[in-house]
Image 1 (cartoon, rainbow, N blue to C red):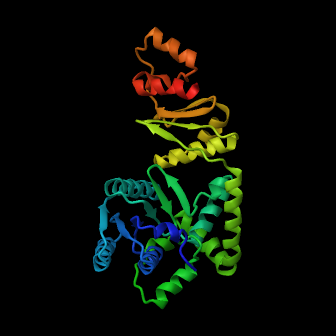
Image 2 (image 1 turned 90 degrees about the vertical axis):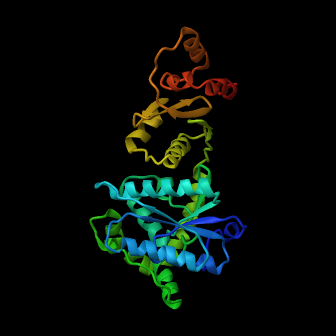
Image 3 (image 1 turned 120 degrees about the vertical axis):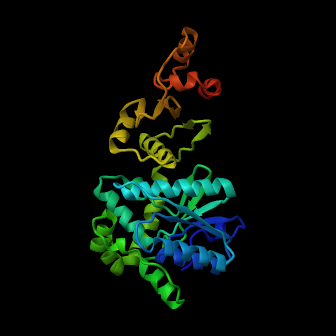
Amino acid sequence: MTLLHLHLLQNGKKSLLAFSGGVDSTALFHLLLENNIAFDIAHVNYHTRPTSDAEESSAIALASKNNLKCHVHSCTLEKGDFENKARRERYTFFEKLIQLHGYEYLLTAHQLNDRLEWFMMQLTRGAGLPEMMGMGSYNQRDGFIILRPLLEWDRTRIETYLKENALTHHIDPSNSDEKHTRNRFRHRWTNPIMAEYAHGIRRSFAYLDADTENLIEPMHFTTLKAFAYAKNPTTLRSRVYGIDQFFKTQGYILSQHDKGHLKHEGELIIARRWVVSQEGEYTFIAPYVKLLGMDKTFKEQCRALKIGVKLRGYVFGTPEVMALIPRLKG
């Protein structure tokens, strides 16, 4: 079995591998070397267990041995909702590295078991098909692309690869702690199912990927300063999904409450931080700024252009956006 998107990875542009030193990222590290792919690694030390510093040192040593850069970020997170906080912390770190060093792709070592876990967790939360299929092998983000080259490899195949090549790796003891939702799904359901039906599950995800692509129209946001805009797709389902994906690139996950209101309200304030204004052919997203000190002429211009009331505070202080909106609205 080969890596996904090998033709992209071998195009000479450098990638950044999110590297924990565990089973999956260690396998991907060595598979990238075998395929002569240019990459560096990024390791986050959360200092959550006694072996954290040793794992950091191992990552640095492995990179040095293979003439690669190892970028390290050290942090201690506040208690509560650790998984989401850790995810935000590491992606902020990765994005800074990508901007600073010009990496084309961010590589993560998610594999088929992970994908089934995600699918089942979303299923039990009442998600739709696009959300359940959210862990794709290729995801466009603002300024870079996430690739998951191992997404068709199941855990057994990866462990076999490590054993056959005598490759050492770290084991995170917290992976067996079922107080974490993902671990409960892994040990109780997804691992036993995958052990028997990996081949069929792999094929089903390929069909579901194709179905999702046909179901959801893409929504491409363009940014001007802190203002983002995109042409609306023809279906409301695609629009809500597109807005949701945009907020994920900003490190924010829309709630079901938010998504419900997006279906029925033209203008909505999200988390007291952003305003989403769905106006005719376009959706506009901007920081929420309260209406203060606007003159009568400006208000009349907004009314004539049918600019959303909640959006006007930001537009008032950003002349470039005020000049752009009439061009978009024709």
